[in-house]
Image 1 (tube, rainbow, N blue to C red):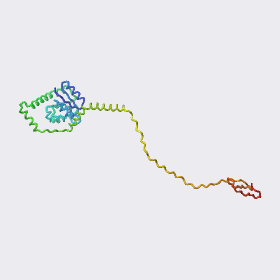
Image 2: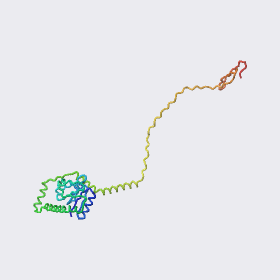
Image 3: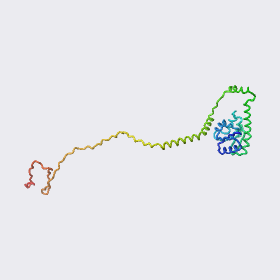
Image 4: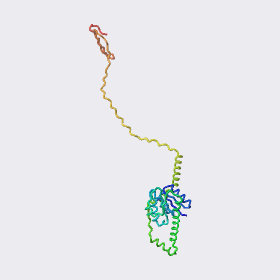
Length: 268
């Protein structure tokens, strides 16, 4: 049965197209961008390509142009698709040599009516190319193949976009396994950390810091203190006047002459 490559960035369009074509027995491969489609062309080797003309980056026009210019895919038929309200450049459609145009959303009868004749034509072209490449005319023709191949040098054309698309496809295929492996390692690391003995916190480091210099306090300047012996005062009065005589605090060792008042009486 024929193989169909459906290129559309709309998941709804992918599901609808795949369901309709699969029910009719077609083998359907869906991709969401033109870069992935150019990579899958090599391994899917489809008979018909349905490519959306309105997609981010490369569009169905670029896919159709690549298919029509590739000798390896000369038998492939291309149907360009667009939404019912989306513009479609008919001049560019003719320039890239598209085989048919189809509006979305996909309707079963219209989709099958467009795909079936093109799939049959592609299968016939594939068979005719196989018979021609087999050289039924004899051994002499097969013997000339090595000389022809040697006369034409092989030139590898490296397209950065195709390499990027190939890497994207490879990562998409390996993403699930990568996620499982990363999750397993994270769980193992968490379990190891949980079961490990607690590590005491490090002791605080003691640093011998220099002591700050203590400023020398300046004391106020003081004068010399003179010792003053206290004196006791004896009270007395003459004519109403108070006479006070200072006496030393301690009795002197030398005798003191008695004093007399003006009346001639000795003072006590």
